[in-house]
Structures are given as C-alpha cells and as structure tokens.
Length: 410
Image (cartoon, rainbow, N blue to C red; front, side):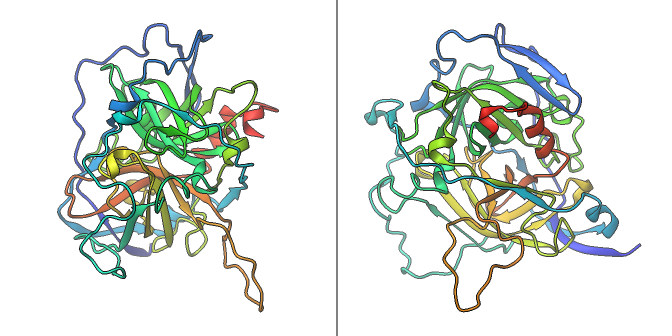
C-alpha cells in the first residue's frame, strides 16, 4: 500500500475538563433530542427575547481550542484513507438585497477599543509593500481588517453574510465566536461555540449579528430557535487527533436555525454563502494527500481591534489526515473569538471575463468549506485548523435542520 507524506503537527494539548459534569441543559431552556447522527436542543415557546440578558459590551472571547506543538514532523496517510470520503460538491448561495436595519447593541462609549487607534490604518513601522507574514511553521499568510475605514466593506456582499456570535455559558458570562449564513435563515459555526464537547450540554441565548462593527448591527441581531451538532461531538465519541479532547476533531461544526422577525430572515438582506464538501476547492478534486487550496478566513478575534471589527486571513491551506480527522490547516494569527468563522475558497466578486479567459476548476465564488476550530498554544507557530465540511457532517446537519418547504432554507 503506497504511503504519501504530508506535514502536520502531531502533539496535541488535552483540554482541561471539569470532573463534575454540569446539568445536561439549563433549567427551562429546552429539551435535548438525539436524532441518530445529529443532536439538537428543542427550545420552548419563548416569551420575550432570549438574548436580552447578553452582555454585549463585556463579552469574553470563546477560548480557541488549542493544539500544543513546538515540533512539526511528517505524517503518513494512505491513498485509500483519503479518497473514500466521496466526490466534492457545493450548493449555491445568494447576495441578498443589501437593505439595512441598523441597531446599536450598547452605548458607543462602552466599546472596548483596547487603546488602539481605530480610524484609518495603524502605522506598523513597515513599508506599504511587504511580504506576507509567517510563523515558525513557515506558512505564509496575511491577516488584516476587512474595513479600510469605517464600516463600509463589511456591509457589502460577500462579507456581510459573516458576523459575530454572542452566547451564554453555564458560568453566566457572555462569550463570543464567529458565524456565517449558508441559507436564508441558517447559520454555521463551530460546535464548541454551541455545546461542551462530550458533556452532553448545550449553551444558550445565542445572538448572531451579521456584519457586526463596533457596537453596530447593520442588519439587526438574530436569536436562535434551534441548534444542531453531530451526536459524536455532543457525546464525546468524535474521532479526534490522538491525545486531544475537543481540539483537533472531525466534526467541530454546528448549524443554527435563526428565529424569524415578522416572517423575515437575515439572508434576504445580507445574502448567504455557497457551501462545499469533501474537499471542494482543493487541487486534485477532493481530500487527497498533498491537495492545497487558497483559504480565505473571516472572523472576530478579540486579540484584533478588541473583537469589534471583522478580520480577514488569506493563506494556503492543506489537508491533514491525522487519525482520519481530515482537518484543514492554514497560516494565520486569529485567536479566541474567531472560532466558528467561515473558511472560504474563491472569496470575492468575479470579473466579467473576455479574450478567451475562462474560470479554473471548482471556481464557485464565496464557498464555505469549513469553520475555524483550533489553533496552537505556541503563538510563534501561527497556524489554525478546521473540521472540514463533509457529506457526512454538513449535509446531514442541514438536512436535519431544514424541514420540507422551510422558508429559512429556501
């Protein structure tokens, strides 16, 4: 059997998990239902808005699950292992109509700017033209604000389909992750922003804010009526890299059904992304060893501009087949708060082509193929990873959340 080499981190930090398990669900906050390969929280009939108790101004970064490695060594995987996942595919998104309904989530004076100069570009001491960054893993990348000045770019498609996700954990504090729309009323994020790995416990009071900028919600905030995760992640049986608990795993992905407002969903205005699976956008047509893709990552890391402005990272990504979890790894420096943000291929608006120039393979613009899942404890490495979208996870989650003729999924 032929062996093929690919570089990946091999040592992983086991997350610290409290021995005493918390209750399976917050009192009065719904009923957990396991439906085969997926698990959901069926919410009770709501009185008022479940997000009213969120502390938007003082939300904490949801800790980014971290791999611990100061050494990067070759890893082996067989062709059979990486080609058995199926043919790559994708579904189409929409650009939306762009109508705004701005809402301030908290007083402007409470914005945490981390003492940074927020108007215009900061003087980094570098020339205007400079090479891409890289860490000790030697994976080049660029990470920078989406908006050059004020919130102009993040309100445009495709960026406005991404946003900040607020929620509460059992400790009573408000936390933040990132998320994006892949249907008119369906958002995708990381499972660790929705449930505690292996504890059979959901968090609560999620609020998705598309194109969040400082304290402004240009397209309002949207509560969640029902979250969905893979049962294997929920009960802790998910395939993970050896020695890891809830870090480098196969199914750190969650889907959120958003609550409509007067029958409307955010995607009508913001639009939503395509989503692809089984290695869509990677060279070679699938999750093959050695396949690469240009990854465009969006998110709200609290270490950048206090988490108040959308950040973009561009880097070459590759497939890791460690213990068959097929994670995607790319260079970047986004940290806590970026969890759940979209990992896209072909981000942007295509030009009108002429002169015999045509598109390349798997060229669907603005296609989400995974969500930010983890990083390294050693900040010098500057790499992040994601559970990839597969026909066995994202397709199953969406089909479970989207009932027949569900307007949020049309």
